[in-house]
Length: 588
Image 1 (cartoon, rainbow, N blue to C red):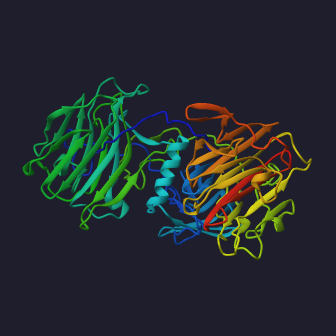
Image 2: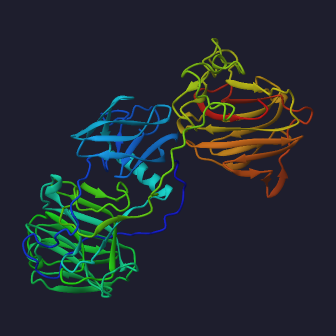
Image 3: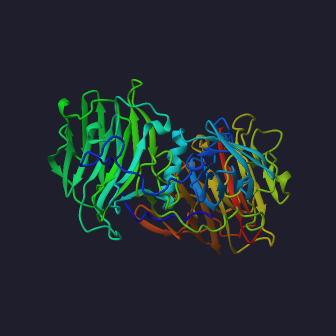
């Protein structure tokens, strides 16, 4: 299922870290009221099955990746638009103790099928032994900044946004999300930084007592007593405070509002602790630090052990940095999108003393079956049934090529580099220029079955690569296999940034802007000489020139078109290349 693009309903901003307002003793702040649930090692990472080394095998774009969240599999592919992921969501089953998994695997054509097998996860490599696909090997690409950024963008665009909710409804424990560095094989951090997005507000659904308790962001050294704090930020009824070495909460100049998006940053070093809550900043003096030692635990906390309350902390985008190597390095981050809604965060990467910290958000709970790419025949041609590299007229005799033969370097063939749907597209390259006395450009045409058509429509998708733009690319309606201007009925031209219409005098007039490296959907419809052009769903029946509006009228009113053609470049330059996909018309 392709997730529909919708605005996220909940906005979260930055913050982090709670502590406790009492001395709870060595490593005793919070007991983890929920039982620890085993977490499968497949959950969370961005698994790339294309290349176990983590490198993409694609010439253009990013590798397609899989993210398992404990309930659903999110498959991210950029087949339609390189570097821009779309998401397919399917349920899966994982028996972590038995090491058995069943999930939807997508082949090179983008077709999903269910696979089952035993698996292992070892040193960032996910190996699945399946009966149908053999051994699948996935690499953890979480550290690839480009992939992660594209995944985050796709989640935001699709409406995915999970975060952690921390509440305190137990009178024997504190609400807490605890990250213990040693649990994740990290060394204590002498010099570092924590950032987090946070909202602290009343919880309308709470079963806790109607009272406000503090929220804390706490950085602990050798234990989790208040005496072990390297520093702590406290949020209390609109006031911002910090914990000093006398265990006292000291108010600073500056306030916040309950329900406000807070962006929080804390920095520490030997003898140093300073923090920001939005624009409010404060620094400890060296003698105020309770335990001046490397940080071992980061905790976001709410309330206390002796009572309950009806407030909540919503946290997102938790990041931990270390400067101990000599430069700032991000060692841990979590935006909580890799978990299913309802996941209790009391197992790795978080500590089992976490309590009442649960993933919430708007991940769909009942995904439908994935929609496979359209099969050949659902539209006139998506070029998926042809062999890669085959010249289009050899692949399908309905197509006619012009100026694409042994005497030129022009290309008109099947490609799998990019595709709007499925895996293939039609690739045209104008690479002749002045290589022969009369330079040529490649043209691919297809006749209408019923001959000249006084009315009708043709649609296709066009991809103009930034690296492939030298001259324009064209959609031609007329009566000439070479796309001759003298036989042109009407034409659409893709310039460097504009889609243009060829008017009745043969001049190109701008209709809309477009972006290179992006698929653009175009439909050209006509009734007699009246033209309608639809670009990415926006319909045009006129253009504006010098503040005057003109109807779209065909250039050639002497005869109806008999064919549709695509071409690019000119007779003088080389290097223009273009992709076309999803050609469709009832006239073919």
